Length: 585
Image 1 (cartoon, rainbow, N blue to C red):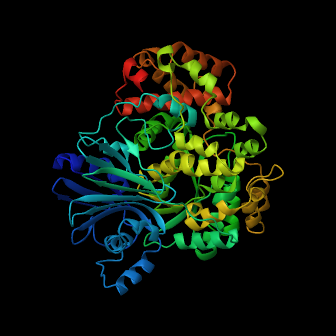
Image 2 (cartoon, rainbow, N blue to C red):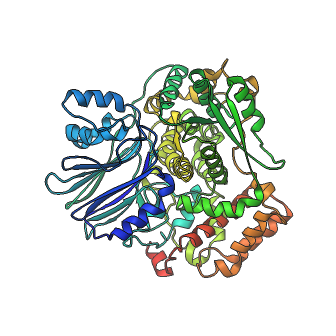
Image 3 (cartoon, helix red, strand yellow):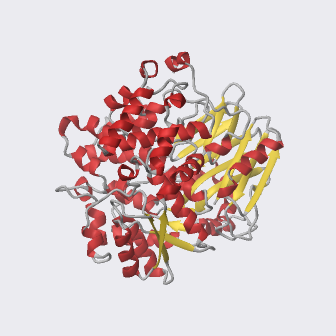
């Protein structure tokens, strides 16, 4: 696991390269390597997981150079196959097989990988070319800036470090605020910065003097297989590492199943749960502790103090690089910091099960919602519904805002197949990578922790995609196939409990007199909002009045989201576009 960065066909000083590396060293504290070749450069910060004493990146085999972020779970199989073809390897690092794999299979090398990855290959055998591959789910993101006129590319694992390149601007993507409030973080390839994009899941990009070309590889094929057996196999495979491995147990079905399967083969398993100091709604520690007792795992209770949230929020927003309106981001950051402090470098989580197996109420409601399901479904993704969103904006900003969803997303939602199948594909393709996977990646790697995701494994994705609708949601019950797989394995209290949100109780925390309330009032003061010209200060002040008098989830989340956006703008000294630029966008 690493953080990677570099450029193609660009003039970049050694100082810029050092700056970019330093800005993401938290994700790779165990080593650093880079190389420069005639207008091109590759670099990495290493988090040592496999063969900690192994060679530093870039990996090199003649004129093929590679940097890599992620884990290749089938690297031993590939090493044996490539060894029979005559290749040799300097160490047991999973990424050391990549140059040989590229030489043998060319641009189709990602088709042979089982893992999570962002791989960058620099091929100098003829005219320089760069090939970039992203895993099928988008677990390991790669952000980039492409200059079509100069035919130059800059890339990095994190937005904050990419901005260390002088050529990358901090100018705001004009519709970004609306896109953010519509989906809690921008979906698709465009980020909140005009200059910066992110490669989509399953992307293979080729960069050379002819330009930048991006294609999307087919996703995992559907397969009919027993869910319990397959998930057990995948969890056991993901436990293999040369460093300590733990699990995260929220107290819900998904993470509890991962912990159960891990405990079956790991007698000294440790598991972690996050909670908040004091008494708050939706506290799940009781359920998490039951799972730990049932699996005989060593239980670690992590508590964070709401009084620390203002400082914590600044750190979280910086690591994410762009706003994410889910308050769970603070919990995620604090949780993985505690995991690392306890001595663990790898953690398995239950993320992606809801998207794959139909675990959200919004999926159930949309599937039963008749002809008008789509507007209601889209409103459930938003901080607040469309009409209320636009009422917050100044007239100038609201003028002719484009659709907040990428064109491809709307094509999936309006395409063929059942409503549930369309929603599942949309969530896997757009919401999961943008909203969940980048949050988990950035906020775990902020503390040098590698998160592994059993439900994102190609085998499990294939099983989930092949399920008929009634095995996902039926009779008002969600995730039916997954609950069936868990019967007899988990405590009844965990299986039969109502589903509840795993997030900060901000309705209770965002109240007059609380540290978070005072911080939000300061950050969203009219004097701060006026210069940007995007939201009307009087309407924001009305939200505070409403929340103080009659707290409700939508008002609280709106204030939280606007607070996150303002902290982000301050953290990155965002360049706000003029009204003319907004109109042009």
